Length: 103
Picture 1 (cartoon, one colour):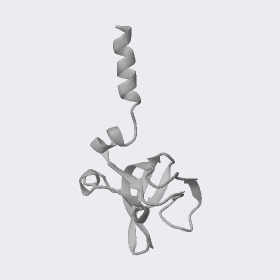
Picture 2 (cartoon, helix red, strand yellow):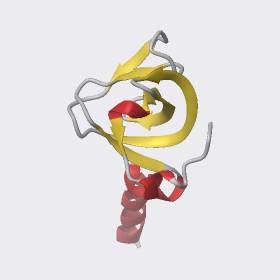
Picture 3 (tube, rainbow, N blue to C red):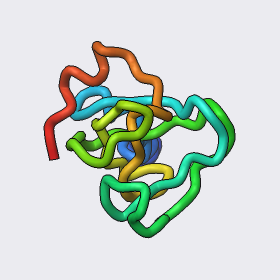
Picture 4 (tube, one colour):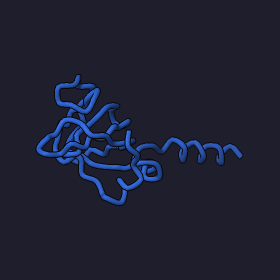
C-alpha cells in the first residue's frame, strides 16, 4: 500500500511539458538567455531568464503583444519561470500548441 502511494506521488509530481501536453503547449528555447517578462512587451519588467538553448518551457496560454522580429504572439509560461516570452524565441510543434488557449 505504501509503495502505491509513493508511485502516485511521483506521477503527480511530474510537471511541465510531460503533463502540459494535455492542457497546453510545450516548447523549447531557440537561443540561450531568453528573458521572461511581466507582460507581453520588451519594455516590461524582466521576471526571470531562461537557461541554455533548448530549455523546455511549459506554455499555459498565448496572447498578442509587441512584435519581435514580426512575431506578435507571446506565451505565458509557468515553468521554469513565470511570465511571458515571445514566440520568436520558442520552438514548438503545431500539434502541441493546438490545445493552448488564449490568455
